[in-house]
Length: 345
Image (cartoon, rainbow, N blue to C red; front, top):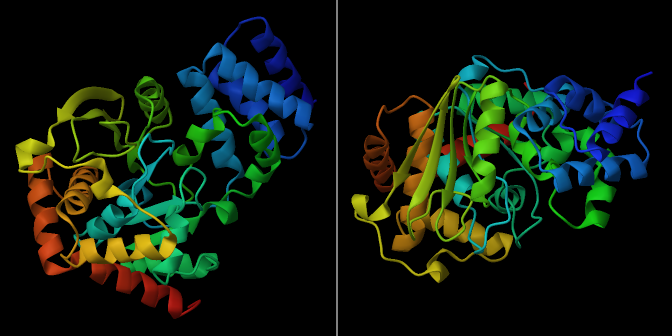
């Protein structure tokens, strides 16, 4: 019986064993289908947390979430780029990865971003995009056309991952980070093959890099910026793990190498959705403060690199600078809003 896959996984974890990817996928599949009790969901999540998740377990959980998600059909999904973070950074910032995604889209990257309302700050990617005039309730046909005609789409996670409702109440009651905090970014509804994934905990970088490689990603950057940011940081060095197919390498980005800094963390602070929307517009229009602009440029450069628009990170920085001057990000935002406003084709 399908339910036994979850019970067997809990039993193995209780005795200190790790799960292979197939067993993890089967166990999480039971949960995603709504066939598990709250006690079983909590047992699996906490057993993995206490033992420490493995690459196979994360990849298996992500596979189950991918199987259950609402898919957005797209042309050449391997060329699509997602920009997101796992959340939980030690400093609160405005929506840097969202602004970077808009800038990258304005410079030729096909961006398929998915995200949610805020869990760890006042304003998540969905909140700021809504404040910028992008509706969150667009039907799939509208999202498909937006990606095709505007080169960018935003997919609201609760709409695309309805199976997550089966774990939401348990996660809230547990009140500790679990594997579910990191598998969401691994399940892009448009099947994006390229990704810039920010991680707040450096010890999870290798875990996510391994999982992305196992899941067949084409090109991804897993990043952690000082002092505790889940994205490229203009405040200090950013550690990068780059995944290209099955190959992984590490490198570091120093913002000073590109003429950025020093800055105070407060210069990146965000606020309400309306306040963050203003910051995003200011940065993309060339009127943002130096720190916020640097943060968006660095993260857009990463998207340009994984998206294949540039071959070198430094070239991405220079192209992103030019994009700020030319208003490329604001143009992408207007294309996105227009595509959504036109409704279904």
